[in-house]
Image 1 (tube, rainbow, N blue to C red):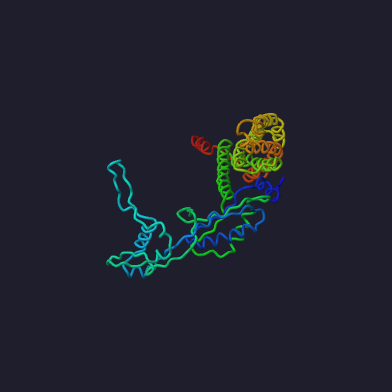
Image 2: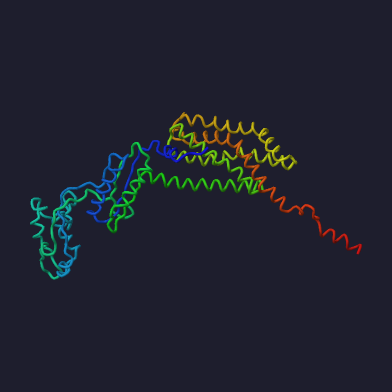
Length: 400
């Protein structure tokens, strides 16, 4: 039983509604705005996206004072001094505090322009800044004033300015949408100092799946190490672990038939399944080894082990499935959250139990015939040699 790529894609796309996000990091506001508009146009053109929006909104009109550093330096002024003078004139600056002794209260004394004179271009140009040499320098001599629109807020991530373009997915897998976005964004010209990265819930899910994948590999390795130490063999644990992929096949089919998305909870169910499905194979392989040590022929030992261990295997599987049914049906508080976990375990156990009874004995026979018999044939004289050669020499010495 093999699954096509289209079937897996359908499983991954179930319930694919979610945020698609593109992060644009860079300092320059104008370039980031242009990049955000480009990315927004690309995102609108991708099938399956809707409600495309940019996080940074256009703000209110503002006057920008752009200081000429060379001219200001020639006058002995720094950008900070010019900015401080403009801030004092228009925003105001607390220079001292006034204490009302009668009521025992204190008031800030703020120096700034009158209300009617604020935010007027001529007033900013005529504003004079005191230089270290005691000269009053008009702002118009060392800076230019421009009208512009400033952002309402500036978001940052990892100390970098960031603009986020988001959309919702509909009728299409998020992974497919992100793949097409990556291809189209890779073709646009990105200014120096800027980075454009596809993120959002799909990226978070991919990171979670990556961590859980390594957790699954670690679980398989630990199970293999325990089995190898108990069976004192490297081949028997491999035969037993062959039941794990059979269980994963059942998980995929179970999620597909129930229409449940393959989520992090379902992945946790797979990790649980690794420790559960091997128990059936352990029963088969262990009892087969017992019969082989008693001198039973290989094929007869496999058949007898299957007949003898069928009832314990079915009992173990049925008790686990019955215990998971309430969770799979969503009975109880918050149980619907863990329904994918229960369905993963149930479907994986059902398919694994049926296939284990067929494939594990077959694989056991193949390994016994191709490996263990070859080793026995390769050293046929080893059994005929005397197991105690030193004892023979000792026994001959008195006669000599």
